[in-house]
Image (cartoon, rainbow, N blue to C red):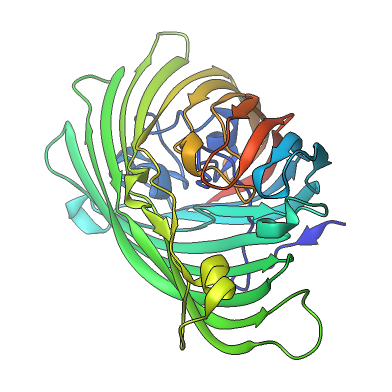
Length: 407
């Protein structure tokens, strides 16, 4: 069943990039596989590279987009060490989401050339639901939802150099459900803060160089948990406060774009995501859970994610009122074999995308883009979570449609 996402009340949850980041937040971002930093322009430059707003036309720009995200079921074939020699062949539930995003970039503010912007996006998310053992033992449902409000500004430092910065306000909510010899049902939310920086250098009309940085934000989710000494029926052993912290990791992008004489722009982006900030998953309760309940739900679970790289390449071609775009990316997974679990059986991925825009008139522009994320199969040999088998057939599909207005 489609889950409809309402702006400012919830956000999509989908593991799109390595880990649980979602870098595709506009028509151009989807069409170019997020190879859209040095050549950012228009309203969504407020998010991808606020320093680039300085080089927009001297008009106000507003863009509203809607993205469909479809996640395939993930197959698992293999054993689960705690249950001995049993062989499993299970599939996670398919997921479908609609994600709205908004972007605004202003015209020049007086003679200074400064600009301001605002983006409302979904920077990260995760949703994985298993219906069969052993997946339900730890991830009957494991959902992280976020929505970010990101006001930004940009100023020219010289004719060739500009600087931008922003303030990140992230609302998050989470659901964790598991069913085994002990069971847990937890829900919570939080509001947390960070920042972003951007620097752009245009030594010529054709060449653009850019660096952007988005800070780490620790999502300090607080809520209520019910812990059962068995299946989740009857009176819970524990029914009270719970909290957990999960990072949205810092990311550095270095990008170069070059525009040739016939309206062809090529951009290359190197992204370093600092996932090593995710050391463990540690749920805290108002009391210490005893015995097996403590082992299952109270003891910190090592994650030890690794910093990862993404390599992105985008191509844009203008034909009069038409703009065609295509992108390809290779995305490394930060999840080490030793701590991989059913909540995020991640792997390296190839990303392929394409899209286009059409200028209806001086004020209105429409666009459509599509992307496919192809995860590699991954074999795990008896790790810390008792997994000894192969995850395969993980896919993600995006379709983004939107409209931009100039005024």
